[in-house]
Length: 283
Image 1: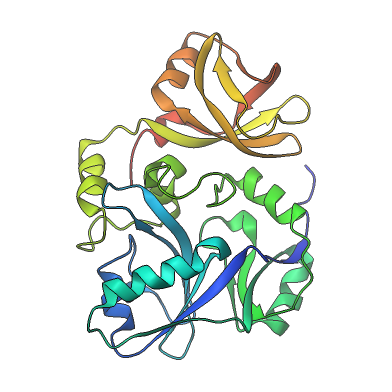
Image 2 (image 1 turned 90 degrees about the vertical axis):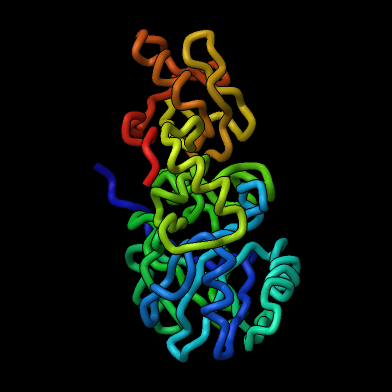
């Protein structure tokens, strides 16, 4: 077995939003899929803002800044819009929401984790997967961007990401495994889109999931159709090396596998790296 690749990289496609004030946590608790009231000091968690129809409008990581406030690691393309939406939901709550141009997001794994800690404002294990090492908020301009190894690790770990695997309003939280990565709390009370999300959770039986595929050769690129025998079951959302993530219909894939049908994409044989039985359940 080969050792996991070490990496240290800035993530320039991310932006940092700061939330401070007496009501910052309580107002956000009512809005996003996993609220900050259970966020430990110096911790981080995955969360999202949904549309009223229950689809992901934006995905982000929420850091405790160690000083009573929050730092949100969000897609740079969505940061200004996210600030506007949070400002609307804030109403009269005492909370300041600002984009921190002096800060950026970085990631490190293996030999480089100690180096990242020396420059980070906050550095903690990525909550989505142990295979991603550390996630950090750092001063802008450090370190240098070198993202290929990060995205390869993300794909191999089975972590779909907003902007790479899907865009605003395209998928439900369970489609991209937010419930399995601690990104949605069905018990915490209200959040935007909760009615739809909770109904899907209570109903049980997830129709779509993002799964990991390993290919006999280089993985085909995004949007390549995935076939189980002759049955279309989904499409690849991102790929690196021989690994890919694909959004698939779980029931169709399970039926084809039970019948012994091969999985193919772009004419290349693929091997499923996830247990479909467990993926059919929500958490």
